[in-house]
Image (cartoon, rainbow, N blue to C red):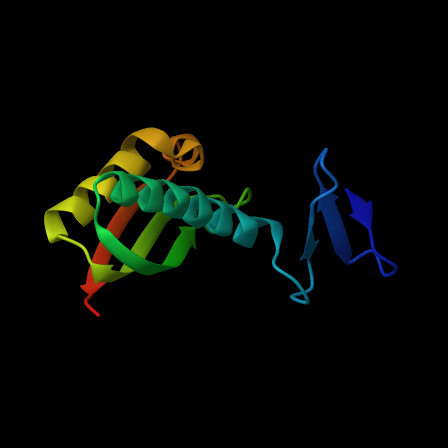
Amino acid sequence: MEAGEHLKEFIASNEKGQSIKMSGDGSAPGPMQTVLMAIAGCSTIDVVMILEKMRQGLKDIKVEVEGERQEEIPRIYTKIHIHYKIYGEVKENKAEQAIAMSVGKYCSVSKMIEKSAEITTSFEIISS
């Protein structure tokens, strides 16, 4: 982790040199917002791979994630809701199964977060 010039922006880098910018002043996502981004990203990657293996006609996917945090410090998430907008010719039961498999079994981020937060999901299929 490296601080920017004003000590309010930070660059987090991995061993491959890939990085994301975070801030505490709203100029970039804050650390807790990146947690929501991580659960959405992890699960979405799983859902896409699972639906492809199920030979569903997925054309695109967009995910919205919201979290509620406790008032006292540490302000951890107590509830997280993930809503998937699935575009294409995807059967409802296959979408439901893929999401359940991801959040309940494969997504490392959701498995870690479920220890402190209730995770709920919903989805809609938008046919082309």
